[in-house]
Image 1 (cartoon, helix red, strand yellow):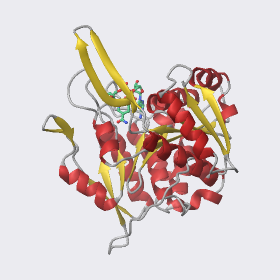
Image 2 (cartoon, rainbow, N blue to C red):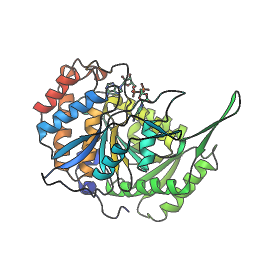
Image 3 (cartoon, rainbow, N blue to C red):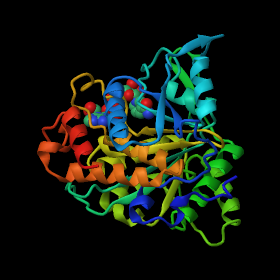
Length: 365
Ligand code: NAI
């Protein structure tokens, strides 16, 4: 499945940090450009998507955006995506996605989960790297975690047994565990961090996390050149906050909920959610998105930091073998952040609006 390695395998440190593994099989259109599906999303989504579009236009990246609407549809009691959105992603094989809001405790199933399930995006790659020029307690964080993306605690299987007693089922299957763990091993080899750490809680969830752990042991035998270790989630959380750099040379892989929480924790250590990108990887289709949500508290105010979506788009470009465009945009973003608080957004203790920050990036291209 991952026989054909991506070009990031031997790329320099910059590329290694926001690397992605997997195979892109899309092709350019007659105009010499790729078409990429764009889901602008909710809340700050349209503002940060606009920043990406402006930077891409200025950088002359050979991409045409195909915006789609993902307003949820309820068909036979099941939340589904509009068919034109499904068709667009299946045709283009790659999408960039803004955050989608999910109602709490009621309403439709999360459209994020629906997208991941519809396209079987089984692995969510979440790199987290210190931003040079933005001081945090740790200067050299360069971690990556891979989150199982389709099941676990996010299976959405819940029932009321009797009033006041509810049951939520954490589903772990061997096929889904195999896919994400195999991806982690391949990724570890490709980016030159031949050490996989399985983060789990099999001490308590002996069957479900136990299956995840045992599957990793089996797959590990196929990769004698990659070191395999296991660690309890609570211990990882403690060690990560004490000194995240001890995970720099390791690729972490973990069930769904743990990956969700640990990646936000890691974001907090390098300056917050405005900075961390991700890639949702499937066999055929990939969707790139920021780790953060729709930030309703700042939506529509021109204050959002588009860095996480821009870095997600750089992961996407590397996946599409457009690494030189990715490097150029990434360098311009990092240079802008390092240039001082007047050019940074409020989440990074700066005074810049999204518009000003975007204009500075374009100047730095
Ligand atoms: P959130 O990530 O939207 O916001 C948490 C905090 O981080 C807020 O103070 C927000 O202002 C700040 N923040 C996030 N992104 C930022 C950015 N780019 N620039 C500056 N500040 C930023 O998390 P929250 O508030 O818990 O969730 C809001 C909605 O987003 C919910 O409906 C949730 O379900 C959804 N969500 C969607 C995700 C996705 O589409 N992948 C991921 C996480 C949450």
